[in-house]
Length: 332
Image (cartoon, rainbow, N blue to C red):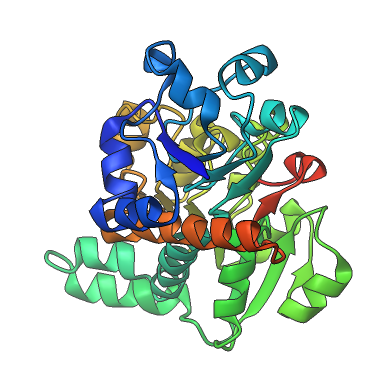
């Protein structure tokens, strides 16, 4: 079996597929000695032509159906050591190439990060920490008014791979979880112990609201300024989903109107550029540079998941993380 690593970014290839992962790949397959990309495919056309398994990660480029048939006529599967496959999967699936994604591996650190933020947000940690040095008593009163975690109402917007993991973690706490997700079955919601609600109810009643919607064009701006205006005075909004789903001007207005509200944004519309000034200048909006997902040592987990998935596919075992065509309608 001939295999290759493919991404336009050799730096990401080195991070996600470090020496120990490449050694494992080389032990199992006849591994191509170079990282393939669109930029070098003509140079390594013979190697690409023979490749049966592609191992990819961030920086996986879009290929047309014609390009796939030209460069990868013998390709059987793409193992994507990252999350969303929306940028490339449709054409590969259309050519009969199976696609697998490490979405579950990437969901783990996002869920861990989100869960930690929810617990701290309900305690008023973020704002309290900022003003404790100069207004200690006020910071303590602010935290008290946030209410804490016992009996808190948490809103999850989107209950896919990440939202489900967050809901499972929250079951260990004495909280009520509302969710908005038209694609979640009633049976799955019951199993998670969460309750359906519309966006208006979530924004107007929840103490902490966390966005996990799929990265779909039609969801741009779905979290409107009108929804943020309904947030409770001491509520917190968390976004580890996608920046373009948020009406950022409306969010800023709502945060300025009620200064005891908080927004924790790990994603914005301008990534990877720095956020616009209106976000950076708003004191109750706290920004982080998209660190919720796999980072540091965590990225290797994604490659390990795909290494194990490839072994299952080779041996004829049922795969765990295959992306089927109809899944592209709902997954991130």
